[in-house]
Image (cartoon, rainbow over all chains, first blue to last red; front, side, top):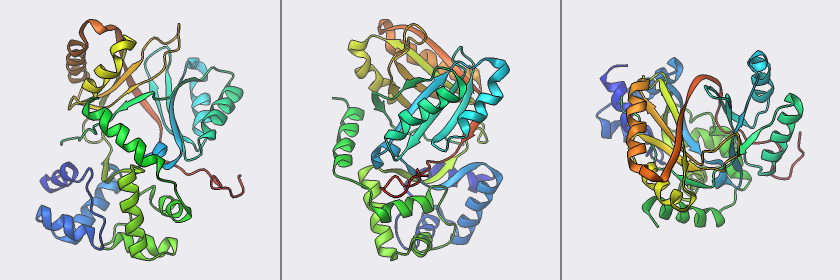
Length: 147
Length: 184
């Protein structure tokens, strides 16, 4: 990443305009050429520096639901259980964490009834308890990663 | 009510007045893994979903206003940006003050998001979660000490759960047929 890439990452974690030629508008603000901005975003996405470029949707605000769930997975079955959990398309993120509860995943869907269905299916498939921890209150300010 | 809670309450009202229709759903399906990287991305989306660019732009603005879209822009892979230490700090905080203190923790500039969640006693005693990102664990632990100072005596116990591996990371997926069509 050069200085221009860092400028793009630092200044474009939100606020991308909704208009006919948004890249041109952003490029003008940043002192770049429109095509250079597009090429750099494409290259950083290809390279994996960016997970993606576009809208960050918020499941609950779309009439859907989201929850955080955790499991205590025996180490000798960890990979198998990870596959069973990840096979559900509603499982958006899944992390291994160092704790007695060692697998933590987010279940998100635009269909609120999917949460209980997926938890029930994972418990049936794995024989393990899924600890459901839906948010009761959210304090979201929105971190900006500065590079 | 603190500022964060006021924003959340406002968004809840917006949500109540908002329901996705079929065009919204087609737009979401077309863009949940990203916007087209072309000079006129909303025109390209319009072509994909069979709508006019003006309609697509209006829908994006409505979804932004309602909070269905949190933001539009680059979604960094924080591991690749050098933020390799990703600590989920968890806190057992007195219920009476948890909401106020959660707002203060969430407002710290190094906390990406903070939530109150249910306990599962006896296996899980923590009710406040705050994601802390740092370049290394020393940085995360310094930041967690700042949170501990802020919480003071209201905090009975805390822990940091580091992620040791990403097992899956995708954007939101719409479930098939959730709009009353055939379910697979």
